[in-house]
Amino acid sequence: MCQKAIYPGTFDPMTYGHLDIIKRAREIFEEIIVVVAQKPNKDTLFTFKERLEFIKRAVSGLDNVSVEGFSGLTIDYAAKKKVKVLIRGLRMISDFEYEFQMALTNRKLSAEVETIFLMPHESYSYLSSKLIKEAASLGANLSPFVPDFVEKALKKKLR
Image (tube, rainbow, N blue to C red; front, side, top):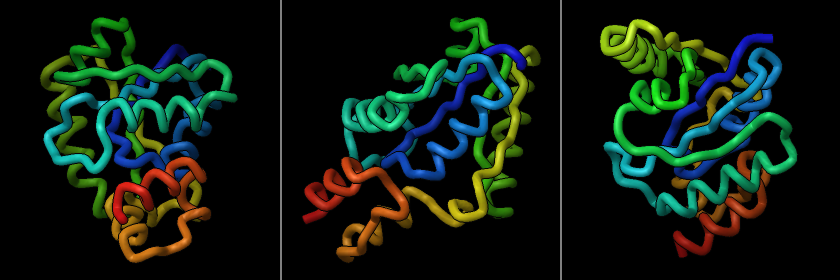
């Protein structure tokens, strides 16, 4: 196994697709640090504290996975933690262009940090937090997509 890696994201809300990426990363890396963006460049439905708590609950039974919050550049956080690898999930081809641009920008800003792309299981490849929020607002059953505590929080928030 390799060293530790960071899996950064907004996780608004976290889905089983995110959890799948975390589990896949655990097979490759000795330690995974899931880092929740405190001040993302986009509006979030859930507060930083709520998003952090969702991830902590979802990974509570997983060894060698920790959850932290951060603000600022992910590569600065990686340098602070002495981590050389960022994990990013790729669902569809539409994700690739943005993720590729971000990875190349990060490489230009910090040549020491490498980005590794992981694909979720195909049963989660179409999931997005945006889609989940839309489905929740229309009263859909979200149990195949998110943990029950996330589903309850979504339905409460979107009433």
